[in-house]
Image 1 (tube, rainbow, N blue to C red):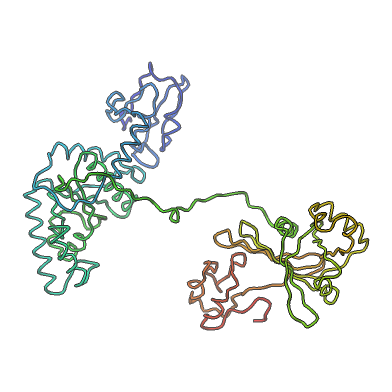
Image 2 (tube, rainbow, N blue to C red; image 1 turned 30 degrees about the horizontal axis):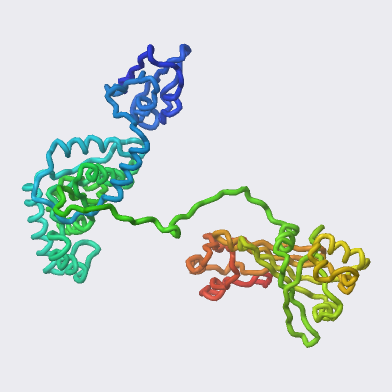
Length: 494
């Protein structure tokens, strides 16, 4: 049974298969003669024809007709450069119109626009959106006067349109003296209300898309329009008048679109733009699992790294030192025997260093430094890998330097360039990982306060709630605010 009235001109069909590739219902195929066929189906929709007419539109030779629509009757594509310029102009010159001429729009123009709304995208091409229309200005005035009078009557009783209080209602009334002569329908001589049944398909999205397409159609014909939700809030307070629209109760209504010939003519388009801060580009690079050597390489790439030691008085001291070599999960650096840094290393071998690169990746290392044997070999090796050192310590003066190595240490990697942040811990040598941060214990009552407060949103629902340690800032906000003290520092006993 050919429900779609699908007809193929076999003299034109070249068996390219383009129609098969674009058919969302998968009901088209090429037969043994390389001609397209449509298989039988019981109903339109998911397992049948979607009524999308993609086959008609894609055929390069115009061999396909469907639903009585013939390819020669389709609108041509046109020049893409001309189309982009036209659409750009329409969007920039579309304005919310709040003043209209007291004049009907020709019904032929309205009917043509309504017909073309069939091309608006909709979920599963179910074509569920219905259109309620007042296209006569006298009828619109009757509906306006009736609705306006009831709205004023309710306002005197302290009942205002949904979402409005006395102050905001009075603001709207005041604007009638300037911007809009009619606070309810902006004086529009016509209205269109797109609506769709709830419970199947995508009624909310479909209604909004149809409304948006209708506004563009209106702009392309020199007509003014305004999307309104205020009158919906008013009509919801007067169900008997709303019932006059004859829209079923189970239908979604997203807006009322007022339209007509504009009273005020604009002279140019606006210049609004989306700020870069509102544009979020995503890049899905292949994830690389960090390791200790990767962290050390960041230190080497930064090179000028903050080193911290403890002096003879037990006070912390910090300076910038070059990371000279990293290999086999070891860090090599040097300093002159006459420097305080050297004395502090000889007094207390414990050392910490930290660096951050241009991508906001931070590495922190804490361990112990050992002076190396074969000092001449290591100093010569360092100078070979870092030739600029010859400018600082020329010739034999280099041997005032002593080389050190860190092979046992804890490493923390912290990436602030990602959203959410990412962190990981590693060890070098025989050191064990020092657990930091917080965990949620079995005392959790599931109130969700920690999840709501977490600045990185790394706490997830569970019994108990769970912290994703890889994204935790270690800020302690959850720890301080847990009403039952169910959050403890990692490493502590419950």
